[in-house]
Image 1: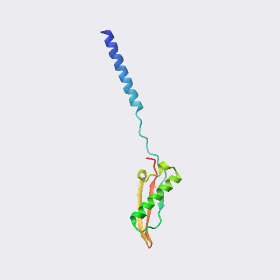
Image 2 (image 1 turned 120 degrees about the vertical axis):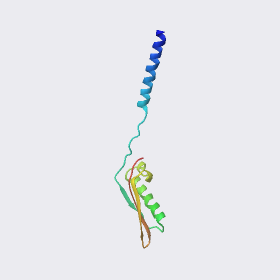
Image 3 (image 1 turned 30 degrees about the vertical axis):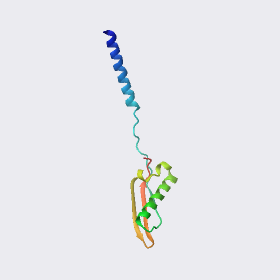
Image 4 (image 1 turned 30 degrees about the horizontal axis):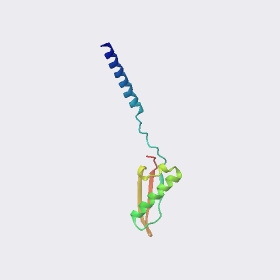
Length: 102
């Protein structure tokens, strides 16, 4: 009886220590690193969609050159927005956002 009780206690202690180790080993999600806002105005284009795409593409290029590739994804940018306007030779869009790494 004593041997079974000691074995049960040992198994319980081992299980508790493994559970505690598993909790410690779970990776935590780090907050995204973000940079100062970037603004880029694209050149005139014939349609708003093309102008918008071009402004975002150039914003991504600028973010990569200024910071690093991991900051260049528009989908991860915080406070991201585009604004377009019509001028005599087409549409011009401006992309503004804070580059973030995730």
